[in-house]
Amino acid sequence: MIVFRKSEEAEKGISAIRKSGKKIGFVPTMGALHQGHLSLVEHSKKENDFNIVSIFVNPTQFNNSTDLEKYPRTEEADLKLLEEIGCDAVFIPTVDEIYPNGSHSEKFDFNGLELQMEGKFRPGHFDGVGTVVKRLFEIVKPDNAYFGEKDFQQLRIIQQLVKSEKLNVRIVPVPIKREKDGLAMSSRNLRLTEEMRDEAPVIYKILKESKDYFKNHSVKETEKFAKKLFDKTALKLEYFEIADEETLESAQEKPDSKHLRAFVAAFAGDIRLIDNLRIK
Image 1 (cartoon, rainbow, N blue to C red):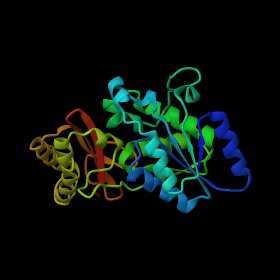
Image 2: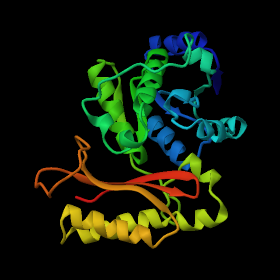
Image 3: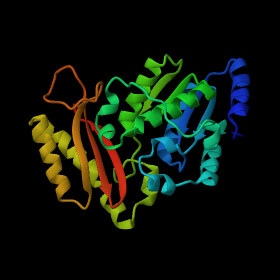
Image 4: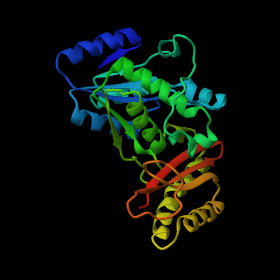
């Protein structure tokens, strides 16, 4: 497995592989890898000849400097996992490699997708995501890039980025990978206390109960139902919202032709967890 640490060497190495006619698959990550990340790599391996993962904790997408400092960094373990599943290359740049002119975000127009849900609570977050993903795509120039549906809003933002910036890459969504108890896999789960780790699977439980409830109730009734369920838990709900999968705008009714998804952000102690589930 090749390890690139410099943007220039990554560009040169990947360019040579591309010229040999190989199709390139790419999985951008912030490290602290788990089975969810590895499922992205497995999807990539099925569709591409050469597979590369990036590990980079992107400072411009963090609203909270403490969260950035505490974000788990497990490079040695990450490399071992990637080698074991047959990843071909890893790109581990420094902040200076990605942001040679300082850690600043570009400003993007994501067609309103950035104004919903996470955007309301994390101003500037998606500009940071767009900036780093665009930069990584410029370096790697993949044919296909793989993103998990746990960060569904981020996935839609990146699809819009590719469209508006006319980037020549296919974005492939990959279903959420869950623990046996239903908790969506996340690097942040490593920071949960034992008590909160036991409580956190209730998020998925409430999503599933809300999906059942939604069959015979309105959007607003279902949102109210879910919020009452969260009130009975040890978690602090930030939002529970049913939204259109395409626009991410809050749904007002049950349109026949549209897919709707329930989105959750909740605090387990001081750890913020997100999850979602298609409910129509």
